[in-house]
Amino acid sequence: MIPAKFDYRRADSADEAIALLDEYGDDAKLLAGGHSLLPLMKLRLASPAVLIDIGRLRELSYVRDAGDHIAIGALTRHRDVETSVLLRAEVPLLAHAASQVGDPQVRHRGTIGGSIAHGDPASDLPAVVLALGGTLVARGSAGAGGERTIPATEFFRGFLECELTPTELLTEIRVPKVGKAGWSFQKFNRRAQDWAIVGVAAVRNGQTGVALVNMGTTPIRATAVESAVAGGASATDAAAHAADGLDPPSDLNASPEYRRHLATVLVRRALEEAAARGR
Ligand code: FAD
View 1 (cartoon, rainbow, N blue to C red):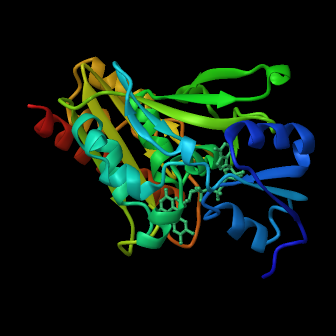
View 2 (view 1 turned 90 degrees about the horizontal axis):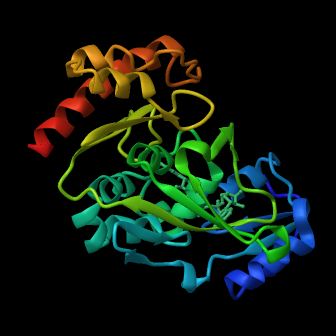
View 3 (view 1 turned 30 degrees about the horizontal axis):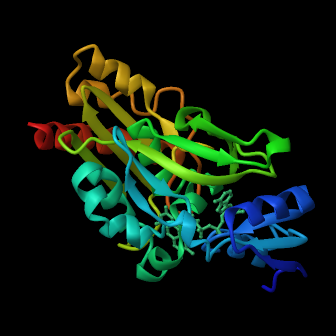
């Protein structure tokens, strides 16, 4: 399919991108790696009148040690997250999960900011940032409120809907340093490069954070599992709560019942692996 007609503007700086967002508002969409937006446009599920290309904003492509956390620019490609020496040492869960996204072509084009802003419940990185208790930095023009930080737990609002307003640019993803913590990323798919049928991100850093991929309309924090672990439950007993209150999707790959079962199995494996790694 061919996308509907659109105008194209290329931003050469974050400030210019924000000014263009202010100018076009709801009519515009930001284009980062294009690996989620362009398929939607080709299917005519999205028809923005204007595309604002931010794909070449080098100022938003970085991984930095920021003291108590690691700061990642929103335009950082999955491949750069995967291979970052800093992330491998300080947040290995995120570097590993990035290595599981799609295929090399997807990882060389797709960006962490695009993945988070898109908020697809089947995406890997939003669940990882949720499990880690990360924070998102959004920037709008001064008139639109300037810069604000949003906890990942408050960011994902509904299917492909997030807390960003149409005139805000996601600029940075902040994740705590958890280099010594136990962690696990369980991605269950039929073929190596597919999206997760169900996925689980877990980290044990004093408290245990667990989040689920493809178990609802948003990336989901498995709070019932986390509470059970905090209360001293075994991995098996805590994992029994993996699908509590959830309404997972049905598609060609799996029924909701199958997804609930998978979530239970994968959460148990994730808790066991995180415990073994954290010793
Ligand atoms: P784009 O497609 O450019 O944008 C996505 C959305 O986010 C758009 O609405 C855009 O306006 C908005 N946006 C982008 N950047 C910003 C920003 N900085 N601020 C505000 N809004 C912004 N993902 C996985 O997690 N796991 C997989 O296994 C996987 N497999 C894939 C396989 C294929 C074949 C393809 C095509 C994609 C796959 N993906 C997978 C998705 C991939 O990770 C995408 O790159 C990612 O979801 C979106 O990032 P992007 O940079 O391409 O964003």
